[in-house]
Image (cartoon, rainbow, N blue to C red; front, top):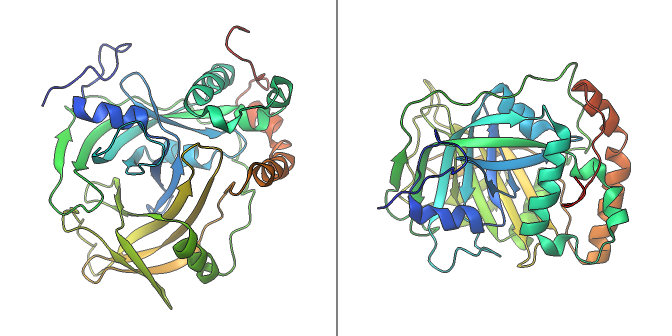
Length: 343
């Protein structure tokens, strides 16, 4: 299979299989998994962008947890398995990318300029019709931290059934890029409360959110995210149906289950918002049973344009006060929201 230079701007960039390039560039969302301090996976949908030899995601400066987990432990995973809105075309493979993350927040203005530019190019419907003066006031959202992910191992299957072992590509050994230095002080506290009753969230997820993925941690310490083909609810969690081609890791000594995360999600063909539910717990690969410990807080923007706009404004009221403090932790001024041609 022919390869391509994965980063034309970086002569040291490794090459990934060329057949996967359209999946990476055309996907509207990918499931991004990072690890907690305890080594448990947390997976959330996010928008992926092809960088210079990297696959990149971003998170708001005012809610930096996805990035801070990666700065602490750079082993992460991206699953490309959501066909909605993708330009990759029918028959695109399902791809899991395990990689080493480098967090970029040393130049917040450059980060913000990049996000304004590339997000508008990739998701034009999300801001269609909104005046620029309104968008300029949304620095709490547009000021970004970037996470650049250098692929270490890529696994791919023909479809979500995962009915056979994956094809595997492995990068050559080399030094992995390091993150920018961690900012001063402590990260901000959670800005959304976690649900008190996970079962209510689970019922909604099974009824309304068609895409489901499971994350475990493999024998090399990387998260591995794979599609779930079916899920049923029981008193303690879910029973999951997964393909026989999943390369399951070995449970630790004395354990019969793996730390895991189950994520349900959906969005429209024209991306204007998304809805997600995330559950953490333990997974037994033999029985397919996932025991839920708790549901995580999740920022979902679902419904019609009016409902999404109202939810966005409410989020802004909570997050805007954090902006100056988070920029100050990095000894930088609050960036301006600028558009191409203005800098």
